[in-house]
Image (cartoon, rainbow over all chains, first blue to last red; front, side, top):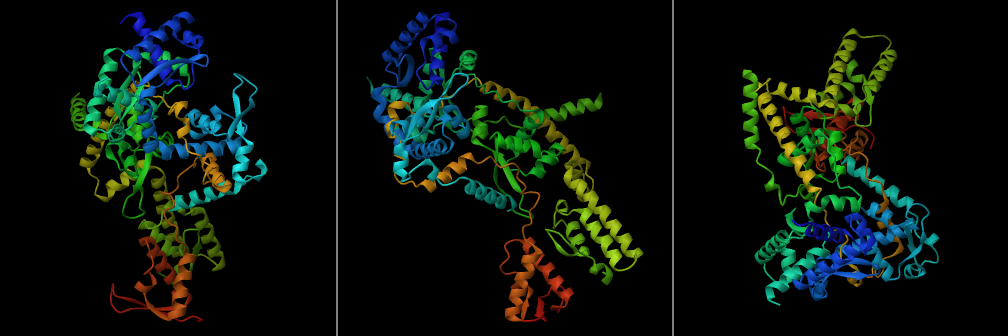
Length: 185
Length: 185
Length: 245
């Protein structure tokens, strides 16, 4: 295998595991080549997908490279998501919203570690729906973005402020008791 | 574009958006073809990735099809995602896992009898890691809890089902011979 | 059973009644020995000795012997190595069984190498966990459509609750208390005055619940609150209420 095809392979793997657009400079660092070469490799990969009519496409957007599904496959993907993932999506979205509501301000990383799965897509959907918004940046390394709920969120629930959210403590205690009862069964 | 290559394109897009293994029957429903054809298409797609030395591979694990990065790209991917997926299991944990995998459903008492030592702590650790779960209760006095492996276990091992575990019988025979040899020595 | 012994009662979360009956239940493994604090039982015994003004050699010897057995059982329960030996004792120490077990363990140990290698190799395959890309964000449902603040709180509690620390279900399989059994038997008999034992346990879901009801009945008999009659061995037990209505 040539060095170039090895680079293409590694590049494809990196793009595959990334959710957000990845800047060329970041890809360059990981692959150990310079930025210009990364752009050339990405263009080659994008062309290869296009030529074989693949289900995925590679695009340069928002200052980075990102893999996504081919627009031609969109109808099937939508059907698939609605048919078999919808319940899971609803559950994921509600859970993420609940965590943001009670833990705000909260980072993406914190949400993911509470839920145990990457929740970026869900978070984006909640932002798009106007229920969650970026509310600042955390101090510290990387200064990650912080998220919180919006006034629209309160309005939809008929709450006048976050202080009106039902307290969590009694629910946590009740859950504990139920566990204890289950355990003794 | 032929109908088959359209199907391959759509299939690739579906696999790309799934965050866990997808059963053939689920893919079949979304693509409007039968299960057997889905399996044939998946095999074709998997072969195509392999032939072009792609950064992604398609495999059948835990009862479904799943795209992952190629193991050859692992060093670069690992550096990139940082969060290591390495699970270090102790010898005791592996031994207990093996017993649960082959003897399931199995009680704590049975595990302890085979291992000759209390295995409760180890079992708890395996449950926390999501590799083992409570699967029911045995009939009879005290109705002890029964344990079995999880789909996560299959995923972690890259097995499509429990039937893919290597048969134990030859290993039993090997133990026999070795012990006999030890005895004679 | 001498009256003196029967008079020595203990009160524990899992059992309240004559110690002799408790000892039998423990030896028959109807009650988990790990649920019985032997120190508490000992204290109770000493107290009883003081109350009855002096030692009965017979009772003291019997008590010490039973405690020794219970301690051994308890050690056995806490250390499964011993437990395995117990099991072999039951079927008459079988070298065949021991041999078969060692073969089996050796095979399992051998397969662990394969497991470890598989798991190690599998970490090289990294899945994509992002779910549908942002183009499909519109497919996420409007989650607040049918949700109240209370629903949201419940979901948050479930997500934020620390994972259960320890599953104790194997250690405390008995959730039926003597108090509950006494209440059930009393209520039944105060209404009907007389009943067959089988009527008193008709609502029991598990065998251990029946055992506890039976113990409750013995306790009431000891108090003189009920009269028991059994025409023949294993025959119907007739219970007559002698206490206040």
